[in-house]
Image (cartoon, rainbow, N blue to C red; front, side, top):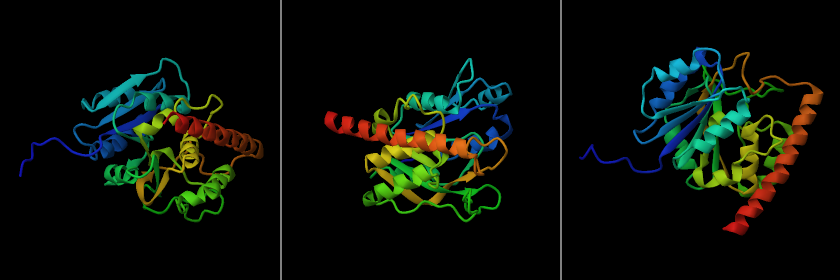
Amino acid sequence: MDTTSAPTGPRVSVCMAVYNGARWLTPQLESILDELRSDDEIVIVDDASTDDSVALIETLADPRVRILRHETNRGYVATFEHALSLATRDVILLSDQDDVWVHGRRDLLCAAVESADVAASDLVLLGDGAPLPHPLTRRPWRLGRSRPSDRIRRQLTIWAGVAPYFGCAMAVRREFLPTVLPFPTFLTESHDLWIATAANAAASLEHVHSPSVQRRLHEANASPSRPRGVRAVLRARVMLVRCSVEAVRRTRRSRRGA
């Protein structure tokens, strides 16, 4: 058996946005690097951290890790957009700075996007492995069916805020990036729901009913684990409806150009 032959199959870019993440970066990056092949990459964009995040990443001295630094803080949406724009491999896996990957995540999500432009998986909680709790009912929060005929139902769940689409549990085919990027100018939060909406509009969103991420819940999570105020919810719903309109427009444009 020749163990020196080049790896086969899709290459992976992991895109990570970092801001003052030194507290949990080491276990996250270790879990990612353990999954990656020699021809994969991690693209990290640091959003003007004031802690030791950049120094910690640089100590890895791993040639698969690329890091760029914003001089001023732009927010996590713009930082993820920048990271995605720098990805060079076939499949893009998004990653937060404070979770831990489940063993097998890379191959699980690469297989899922063989037949879809975007794949999203379930999540479990770091520590006890319990399902992610629904923010309202506290019951297990899992993805439902992913049949193309369910597009309307899925979009309604996104608008209602009850769809557990998290960027840290997503994969995107490189060919779909021109539809996703640039992010809509009005997108101020929930880049993951924008990606899910775009894939849903294209009837190319796959659900993976196995967890690929152990999610760490803490006071600084960008995605809230508890309900927000009425005004914030309404603003978010209006933004998501606008995302749907933009997703349909881009999908039609892509099909015309095919």
